[in-house]
Image (cartoon, rainbow over all chains, first blue to last red; front, top):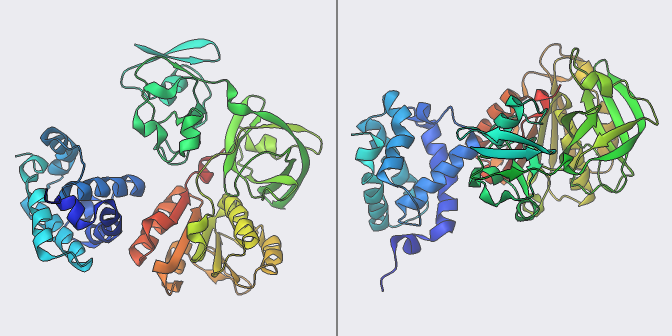
Length: 122
Length: 316
């Protein structure tokens, strides 16, 4: 049986390696940093880990409903497609920095992309 | 409706309420501080914690969980919850109380072999009133030490600052996860505190010295005026025990005797030459801790090596 994306990308160790890089990027990206500013850092790190685990095709328990409920307050703040694009971009550059092959980055981006409608409440 | 059973009373816990909210609403003087599951001041023990939500155990060790510890500020029980009576309080005798600054007192209690890790905190209780205080002592020392800021109009601190040698205080069990560990051994330590947030960092510093910490240790203490640097002399004594300990006090109001002037949140980040190789321990005013934590993280410190004890100023 073919290995899952999560296994090929490096599993939990990859999540742990990526989380600080990724969180630093979104916090310093002027396009989106304000969506991340008000939340306590411990919680934010936990959320980013859950997101990365999900994007890497790992064991995550997100439903479309969770995604909608979890981002509804951000949609009210004006969260839109351009912000979603910025997050995907940061995900890509994080993985590139970690030396993840382009094909795997594409797979992870596609998984993250699959949540767009729910995250943006469309 | 679920119930929380506390010292024999059945207290109702509404579906949208945490255990802490239920206790406070019904007149229980339950300890708490951050209400966000971070500070662990509300740590409490249950007889039957199995029906609790995962958030109730945020940051607790497997051992603590197995012993029934949970956080009341995060807990939403799915059934009735039986709390253990006053979590393991014992009585401790006052050895000494020394005034170190106009509003800061150094309280020493006999240790009675209390198990703790340097940097942890416990509840001090007097006449039924309790508040969390950090330990500034090391278990190898024969006493427990606390740094108490006397807050005018405070409920507990003025009473603690009026204790005399031979008086008794109740002490709870030590808790908290802000302590020196093996992952810090090969790194440079950044210990940064404002006010009496210094206390747990002194415990951590003593531990690092005892464990022959290999890297540099930078101890930053921030205050408004020179009086706030109440532990200056003791720190200079500790410097004799560790050749790579650097003490960097800073004052926001008046600059005196060559002491740096400014806020630690501005002064520290540019001083760190290799932030990715540092570990940080932060304690003091919650805004200070939040701001410095973020800045250190953005400067390159790994999030897992920035430990914060964010509640010291919420004490009264």
